[in-house]
Image (cartoon, rainbow, N blue to C red):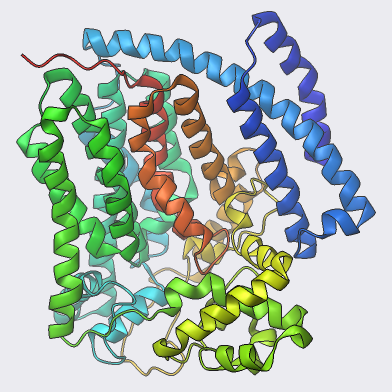
Length: 560
């Protein structure tokens, strides 16, 4: 309610500024404003009631929804109209800077990377040697034979982390093994984010813009906390940022010189391979981005770029279909792909158990633990439900038929289950629950059911760690700044950037946003709702992408 009042108070001065500037009507801004208001209303309903139907069934919620739609839409429309006007002016200045080849006065690349490492140093020291997280421990269990070797976590990443961990073990300490990996991934993350700032500088970003980007990477708790965490996601986010950066560099160079640099092309291939092998989502990013990248490039360089995009996919297929089977690596189960559907089934059984036919019950029971589903269902996390998957892939056809027939009868239940699993990625509100575990500031210990011999413990006492955790929790409650720890703000910044591209009809520049849009779609069907760990790659690339959408020119020089 407080934010609605705040928007109502801000609406009058914003409207006066829009009127004084005589800005034209912005349909894209209106669409974005309406969608934002709608998801704020839906998010509030799910946060408090677990269903969108509360908007219609609870009078107080209906009144609040109406007020939110009116004031959120009006306020955000005015703000976006002003932002688009500013972006138009900034685009003109940036085009002049790019044409003149002028660079803003700012820190050089290595100084920027060093500053980031220094900013993250408190997390790296206080939580030394690093947090041995659940996923990291499970990967080491597989690497050392305590658990069956699977590709649930990409085996290349498991092997890489295991080799670094074993170096520390050979030198006499599991703590040292964790510290070596944490140190290496911190350096890579600093290099990737510093390279992103440097790329913005080459595109013509001004000193204040560069300073804001650097401050975001240095101060927002996510970067320091994930730098100290022993898990694959930090490296994947860094590789994702580098991949987007290289795509932007290729586009810029192709338009300036009419050709691509062989060195950049090789780097694009190598980073693309690493992206595909470090996390399965990387392959989806590369394959779905490829058509947009090829279409955006000048015709005479499209074959080269096509080869650079296809090479990582070829390597990924060979490793997944040839190398892993030869090494007896068990492939990832189908439950990872079908988790969102399993959630819908579980919610249907919980809310309408009498409307399930005998045939549908048998089809579900062949795939999932039918009787346990109502108790295991939790709207924002699908792990418990998908863990009951029987592994009977042959029964999936009958299950999908039952799933479809049930959805036709009660589509609102399926909509509820889907939105309950993803609304956190669109709900930009500090009240959204954010637990410190999302920052991975913990040592998990042995995974239940798996006996291992790892000996990892924090060097400093609990009081020091508690102070840092208290800072992170306090940061979440700071107005506006606290939003940097919530997924929703990054989703809307990404969608606003896409809206600006559509508004200016710079269709060829849309390719730079596609990798993040692909990951956002994957987040919508991911196992956990509003999970900062899944949003980390989008966060890493967003400053570069937003500035690229403003600064990029559509002019294509003629080839001599």
